Length: 361
Image (cartoon, rainbow, N blue to C red; front, side, top):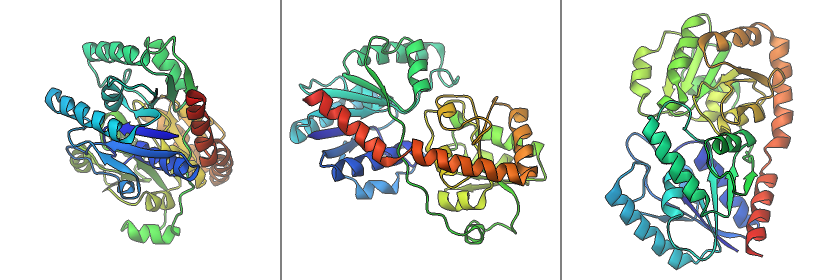
């Protein structure tokens, strides 16, 4: 069995780590696989995990739409397919799916939706219409569509994408982070003293809405907020942050988790974010909006809270968790137990392996 994964770029974030885990697991299971990828662009940083992965570079492939570069990327990817001769081509995210699923290929095709941006307001009406038409056309050229959660698949079908296609939901598999001691993390992040802290981890881009995290911080000046991550909004977020919000930029996420007591996500759109899963794996309750498949990660009222995406939506449950140590501890313990079962790596690999062989046999 030979599987070719295709992704536009391996920038720091959940999708790169998802693919890292999947690739290593498949290799251990005897499934030969390589990852065809391009390069990060703009302010993005490539995830260091690429150093340990079987990477085939597609020189002209990147996230940005560029007709000339995309044509070159298509030609380069076709050559990778000729050289590797895969049984299955597995594309990830929109750009790679667009190029990878329009190349003539005699084997099987799989595409994973790690989320979508069709309803977060980042696209104009004509852009949404174009993506809908393109994705539905491409779904018809795909043997199986994978979503990282049931809700993501449901939303895509409501947009008219892949209504008659075969869908499979496969949750991420995530290793429990290995955290330093709290005091080590506080020292590594140059923080002052040990106090209750709220963590936020993600790319500093519009869809993750770090501005909302700052609004929540302004509404709770007695609490320290830690924002970790980089991206095009990093400098503007730093400049506008209130005194109780530390904008850390790119730091070790294990330090961020070790120094935090609660984690919040403020995204306008999500798939099944690894930041929320990792927080729960180390016993931190998570407060997140009701977008994408977050309800499949956070059990409302048990492992954290699912809230409306507004300042008051976050401040009310945050106040409860900060003031009630026993509730915070109970939710954290339940979160850890839930995530250990729901997001095991063995399940991730087993389900992908079974899917590939069901297509080829």
